[in-house]
Length: 118
Length: 404
Length: 97
Image (cartoon, rainbow over all chains, first blue to last red; front, top):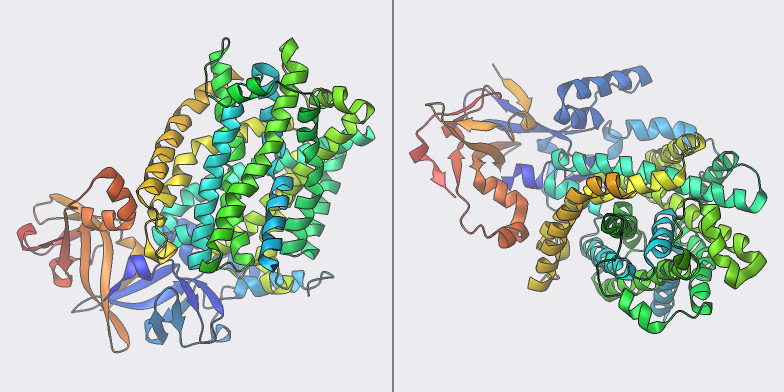
């Protein structure tokens, strides 16, 4: 039995190789008949922003769209891919198979140009 | 053996990194206006800081989480956004004051107006963060900071009466201007217990890869390091008291403050004061900017670390860079660093209870401190500090209005 | 039709009994892994969840010994309208914790 708010929300997520993917910034619940189900973990500033206010989340999405990094964001991780929920959440995927590093990659394009970025 | 060396280095660099614009400003004014009678405030504030730093270091060593990470995980983003937002405002103000202080120091050495020096000073700070690593930054800043021992040397050379100094460590009410006295006492606490220091200390523990085995190093570094560092602030207070005290001078500018070195250092007075102020402020500016990167990276789940290739931690680099840029822009506008310092110090006190409260929870949870939980004494101390923090938070704004 | 919404749209919200009496806030959601999905089993409402979140340290200091809160089985709380969480049973039917 998992305590979702305490142990899943805001917890670090790592990929199958132990690489940091981010934190669980949002969680999606689905319900038809029967008990509601937690289906997806969300990672990304748009999900985090909408926790403070939906308008903030929409604003972040608009910024990401302007920067061209809004495809498949916030990053969605199906709970089916979650292997372990402990001090960190380990998932079956690799970072590359998701859209988690969009901002990092965007900024890297500029930062890598500076001398000494190695 | 290597650990003992690193420990000694850690303590020495703590001395160098202790004083910055806040502690110098408050110590000078406290000494000039009230003699030795606020020494107890410096001691108490240092103990407060050391106790909290030790706790932050403990969480970092045992659970590998900084304060920012632990608060996000344990309390959630909704809770964190309040102290986080407040800390960012305070840190920006403090960074502005530090850059201003460094610029004034350079002005004292060169005669050229201080606003021109903000950008070079800020850019140098950025270069250090861009090219440096944790040891270079920590040890470099700390070793350069040895120049601040001129405060201790000056105090010693002025031969203050030992009995008078001892009496200064006993809290007492002054004969005049109680509001101003209380304001300075509270400001000393705010200048010493800066929130950024706690997360920075914890982040350092993680950068140095401390483990449960290193908890004794944590305790020694926190208490001895901050303890020795506070002797510099005390030296500053004592020197100001001996040189300005007899005339009850109110010190309003750093140029005025520099005069306190004249009796001991003669024509080197301004140079030594400027170097001490400049190095202290520069070091603090570097740490505040770096901490902005730490806090955002840890709270939001980015890759972070000053020992990593910069291209691998691009968001972290962007964070400390924008923080510095922010500080440079605001400081160049020419605000009086002394006034900005007093505002940020007052705001620090206002959010103090929010900063201490998470410790009360984290120190009792196995997840964060393992079996090294706070005993009755530790919890009692934290509860007392939270209450004291709340009391100070309530009085600081009225005191700021009437006492400054 | 599958309703889909965010967890944080219900966490922290007030929970009402059928007669519109406020019984506390939703603080925690417990779920079980079943196959490839996580099924919500319980909701923690009121003081119990909050005290849990504030932790032992504060409880020791403030002297709360018996947090009074409720645990609702998944079918005892209607979350279809996140803005108004309503019990589908009597308050007395909830487990106390």
